[in-house]
Length: 106
Image (cartoon, rainbow, N blue to C red; front, side, top):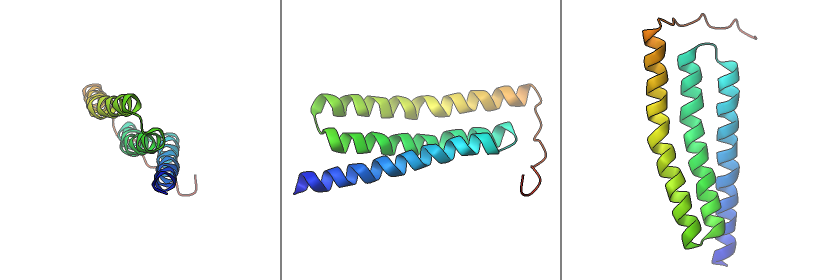
């Protein structure tokens, strides 16, 4: 019974994580300037990946797999903010300005 509940919880986490990763990809394609694209590419993508990892962890439930999943999550949490900060710094140093928002319905 507990295994079935964990499998269903894992499935829900996988689906929610996949939807968040999809919204991140759509945001990167739809938004116009660098800063909004960077925001769309980092915030929901990291949460989506963590939910996917949680779903996989709930499904696998072995020690070696859980250790690897925790490492992947930690490295993701450590590298994404640093990369986003470096991209924002490079954009500021090169003088990139915010572009005009796209017209409604575009």
